[in-house]
Picture (cartoon, rainbow, N blue to C red):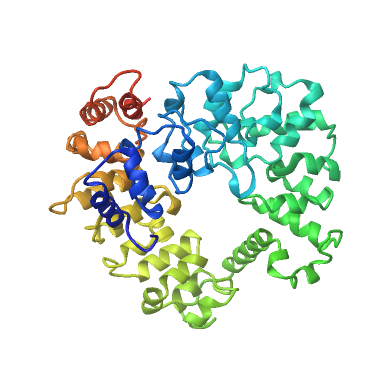
Length: 490
């Protein structure tokens, strides 16, 4: 299904359910690969019997489809289903039911339930007063990040940090990122850390918290810290330099750095070398850029395939040695290896007339300017979706508005279900009120939940008025009320 567009798959879904939109019938009739296309409005009538649970678990779902406006709180639910936990969805459950649901989300490895900060803080608020709230092994490690540490008994603090070791510290938003420093300070006190030289035991207890340590800790600590750093989604230049220092010392399981380079790929510290290469690249970029000729070597498909590309090219040489034809013929391969802004700007510029290339720009689109966008042709919803993909970077509100407006200026285009799912809440809030008011009730009904917290009060009112038409018979106890609450902009 990955080779087909979202709009095409939804069309197939509509044909399948045209005769019967009953939730149970949909689960029976829809192929597993189309499950992510089912709008949440059609997922309202489930029971918690074993047969239904088994059917749900066999399919892959998106978080936005959130099943917790229905009473499904058993431990047998798949991680794909559990990721739909929301405060709105569980608001009709008893506290005991919600607590069971939170505990069911404690899974590790490939079965880990991916949860966001809003979900985790909601979970903690529900269980914080439970008698077993300090039985840390019962709850998802990521939720432990949001514990009120003052309520953690000093006699249990080591157990707390042992469970926290598996948490994903990158889940913190910028608003709550200060908790990272507080957690490490508390860990130092609990574990008796008085210097930057951590023992193997301290490293083991800290686990993923090692990703927060500065270079002085890394280069002075027990070498087992390298294994913990493999789990880090990213390292700073200071951390990467400290890892290199530790490797050069030869006092690791990998031996000396000269030997380390020749280990098999599955034994390599890939993240370390990637960042180490970035430092090398920075050094190369600082060399003289006066020449306008290609002196390093013309960039070809073979050049791009080499593991060292583009390390041999500073910005000037990258520009001089890369042709427009090579960019167009090898765009995916180039952008897979090139991620620095100066280089991406060159790639985008050399793509030239990119009207037929916009959908595949990927991360390169993040460096686009107003002039670039004005030259693009954005007529298809799949192109709009590709440009709005947050994994390629976040747009400035004014640029997001320009892209969406350019799409809507095409005759026949509107803010339908596919468009709303592509744009999502924050970018929707950049649009003029008159454009928002043009959204139909049917489109909003079939769209995923929208985060409209950044919208103006007038825009929020307009969206909620449309939502009340989309989800009729709204009462506090009905699924329709729970579906529409996301449009209150709270």
